[in-house]
Length: 328
Image (cartoon, rainbow, N blue to C red):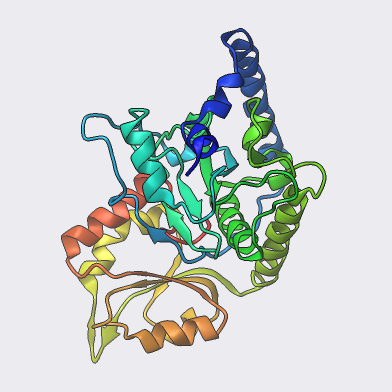
């Protein structure tokens, strides 16, 4: 790592934002938030896209033992902000987290997601975290960093673009964000920095390539929505027995989201989304495979203890979160 790498890693490219224009930027951000709310009210909701594979390292990356990020409601999220690490692509989130925690005194790494050059999506902070990934709007945005330095004619790898599109399409569906209406922006569109690189919105314009891939995934997801049942909550039963404790645990969730509830795998296979309630002792992996092959988007809540299951459902109600990993 040379001196330039260290300067980028330390975030010196952010220092171009003076106090004089910070107030102007804040006013502009407030206006943009109102514009996003207005557009959400008139635009149709984006299609719901299934979550891509995500490796969660948020609990194991270096953290500051005496500091912690503020928390927010998921309902506050209004924007996805794209970054590049401005470092050689082989430098991963562990090194960046260590530097930002030890040298800058941050509570943890400044991003929510990190995408490696080979397309691995790593979650680096919970979405409820107000992480320090940009000077303005941290409280309402999600920071997504792609490994690499995209200056001159350097671009993300095809695998990175595919992964970034999959992640953005999922998050846009989950939070009702529209890519071309401010739902996805580059870091440099919020503050005066050359991030996520000089080719983001000019030259090779990989911003447009990312948007087109997101829209392709959303179009494909929209075609899958033509099903008789929207959401089916699948409970276990066998030989006159049924999972009454699980049903009772889900009572608040059922009242809030009003899914179709039942015990039939074949009926569930006609749904767009299926939530399996039960671990593999109740529903073996073959059931999940059958539902996916039938075209369903499947999530499993595998908690077997009724008390913890009730807590899980109640948390979903409190966070207005129909699914844990599916974009709705």
